[in-house]
Image (tube, one colour):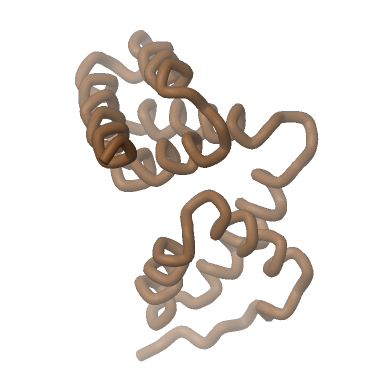
Length: 134
C-alpha cells in the first residue's frame, strides 16, 4: 500500500530547497532520498525540501558552513544519526567549512554527547576526509 502524495512539489519553496540540497549533497543523494521514501511517505521529501532546506537552511543570519556545523553537532549529540552525520560533514566541506572546523565542532560536543558519540563521529569524519582526498 502506498501513501498518496498530498503536498504539491511545484512550489517555489520546493524548487529552492531542492536546488540547495543538490548543491550540498549532489544529484545522487537527492535521488536516493526520493526513491527511499517515495512509496511509503512521498510527502517526506516535499517537507524536507520546503521546510528543512528552503525554510531553515536557506535563511539569512548564518552562513551555510556555520549552519552545517550546527547540524553536525546535533547529529553527534543524538549519537545514532551516523548516516546523516556523514552527509552533513560532506555538505559542510562543500559549504566551505575546514577540516579543523569540523573536527573542533565534533570535539566541542564531548561533554554533552559523551566520549563514545564523539569517537564514532571522529571516525565518520576521518572516513569522509580520506574519501575527499582520494
